[in-house]
Every structure is written in C-alpha cells, then in structure tokens.
Image 1 (cartoon, helix red, strand yellow):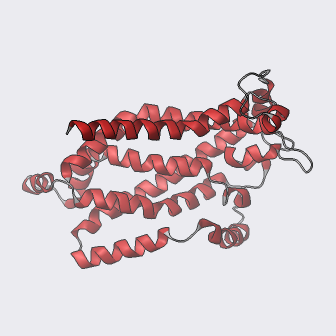
Image 2 (cartoon, rainbow, N blue to C red; image 1 turned 45 degrees about the horizontal axis):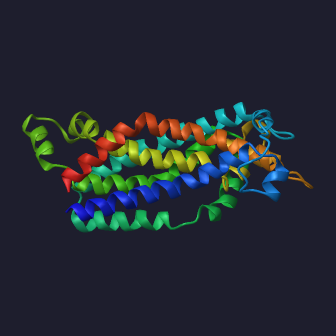
Length: 276
C-alpha cells in the first residue's frame, strides 16, 4: 500500500542518516587538532588541521606508514575472500542435496561455529603461528580470517541455494550436465550477486579486524590499517587528529569497493527475492 511504501522510505532514510553519522564525525575530527577534539568536539567553526592527514599517511612512531598498512590490509582481505568463498560456496551448494535432516544437522554445527568469540582463539592461534614461524605473515593471517568467515558465508549461501530455482538445475540435468558442471556453468553465474554481497561482509570485517591482527601481526612492516593507526597512541599522549585522519583514509577503500560492486549486490537481492 501507499502508506507502507512511505513508511519504508522514511525508515530507509533514517537508517541511512544514522549510518552516516559516525563517518561524518570521523571526517570532522580528522581535520581538527587534538585540543579542539577534546575541548570542543562538536564545534563546526575551527581552524582546520590538514596536517593530520600527512601524519596519518607517514604513520606514527615505529610504524610502517599508511601505504604499508594499506598493502597488508589488502593482502588480508584478498586471502580471506579467496579462502571463505572457495570453501564455503561449493559446500553450501552441494549440501542442499543431502537429506533434509542431515542438512539441518550440518547447519546447526556451522551455526555453533559462529558463536565462538574470536578473542578466545587468539592464544591458540598465537601458539600455533609462533611454533610454525608464521607470526607477522599477512597471508597466513588472511587464511585465518577466511576460515573464520566460512560459517557465515556458508549459512547465507546455503539459504540462498535452498531457494534456488529448481528449473535451472533440472534444465542442466536434461542437457546431460553433471552436478559439478551445473554448479560451475549455471548456478555460479546466477549467484554472483549473493556471492558479492556475502563477500562484502567478509571484506568489511577483515578490513577492520584488530583482535587477531594485533597479536599475529605485531611487527610494523606487517601491520594492517586497523592496527597501524594505534601507533598514534603513545605512553603519555594520543594524537587523536592523526588517528581520525587515518580512519577517514581507511574508510574510503571499502566505500569505493561498495560503489563499484553495488550493481551486483542489487541484482543478487532481486534474484533472492524471486527465488523465495
């Protein structure tokens, strides 16, 4: 009805505004000096401190600098996406052919995996990585991120594949295709939207994760952005201006990625609505 559409639009606008408020404050604090941030954080009239961004780019004391942080974060995200998608998407698809009860058991086991707080895994991961000489190896830590993202990726994709149009699968069988070729030739091309949407969730998490990275990537040359900005926190002072400037710079890559991939996400949501 018309009233429902109006209510939905208003709700969407409110949610959008609330989502942008933190980003606006990060940008605002990124062009203020530490004194203004502490004394008058909400003031809109102030002397801009644009040197915050140059300090954020060069990094704090003993850090690798923003370009190093960015490269390490990019490695973490790429590896995490590759591991989670390559492992979880095929598993999510082929489990739909299991008997319903077994499929439910699998899903319950996977759900259980999502309830384990990552902070509880830090010490076991550190001991294992330390014994294998993998500390300060972004690729190895990216694999950890990918493994931790598998449960969520599996659950979301499994739900989508359960509702996938059976006519497409039956058409593939009629053409003499095996289940593997049906998956690769028919299902995957029609699942790009969902995969991108779920992968973007992994991207956002891996880009900003600190609990594991601060332990496994403690060397300056191996730190990602989320850990690198902590170099502006000293023993006796904190450079808040540089921290917020760094956070502002760090927010742009995911934002650009979303803008570039938004059409795929939209198509995926539309297809998901048709299959249900």
